[in-house]
Image (cartoon, rainbow, N blue to C red; front, side, top):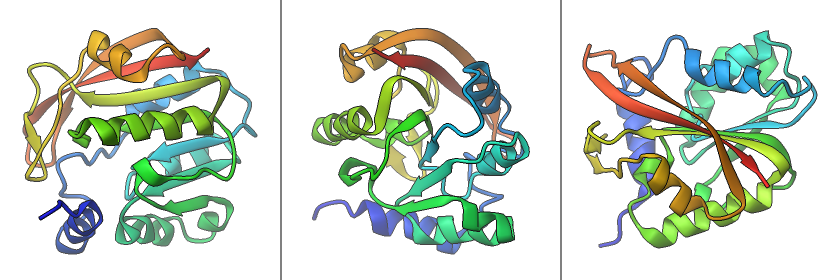
Length: 205
């Protein structure tokens, strides 16, 4: 039977507090640092892909960014963030979608993805992701993407993942992206386990 991605992630957020899932961060320090390092104007469009219940969008609002979007396959995850943001949620674009099938209605200057891409173990899904990314990101736009690093976890949320280094990520993205920065991060989960992440900052060329 084919794996039902939407059902899996909906179940995760219905059965667990967003504060207890292993990828939860109470301070998205490196994501924020890399986004701010782009020095894009506050009105430029930024999307957090797989952002669900992440608090990154809260911090971007505090940094006065005004053109924000969050995409997640789980309606429950998005509803958690909408509730948390209150009135501020009205100013955000919310997309409930499988990223491999997302048809973006607009172009973005920054595409941020922390811990979604590494779940795409099927090469067709990865090709579709890159196709969506190419369609949605402006020329000279910024791609900030984070995955488990080589030697990091081999599974997450009961699912197989793929670990990445720069060579593997460059091979997946193709010739339209130039790597300008990579950063390692030791993420401490709510259960106090260490997970090795790698962050990549690419420019679309």
